Length: 152
Image (tube, rainbow, N blue to C red; front, side, top):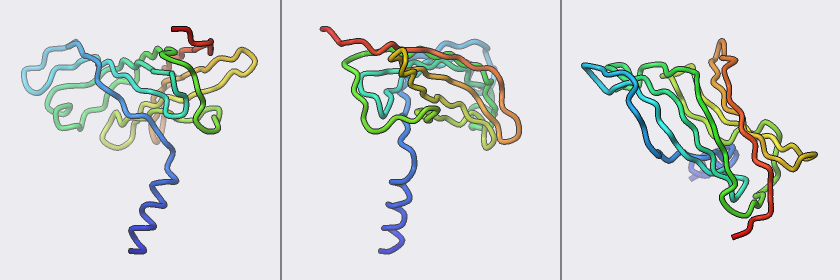
């Protein structure tokens, strides 16, 4: 019973991150064996900002390695976040807070989305980038959402 309580406590201390919903994909390279290389489009809602949805497009490597989850995906990604309803903050926002993270290689590489709040301009800024244990990539994309009154 003690170990169950410890596990629940440990999970509650982990940062809340969004999970992505597949929107669509297109094949970019035909592979004879295994899935094709493709670009996937995913959507996720910011877990601490109600009324904001982000759309992320990124490369997925196919082939035999990609089919088994052993391939390393490229670092390129694009992001577009939009206000989709009235904006409401759920909890305290921290600059550079991770809102989405996905593994892009077996062990060493991840793609992340972090959020900043530009208080002077009343704007949320989202940055997507890829990092590695040893060396990350300078390739990134950014999107900004001015927080406006929501009118139906």
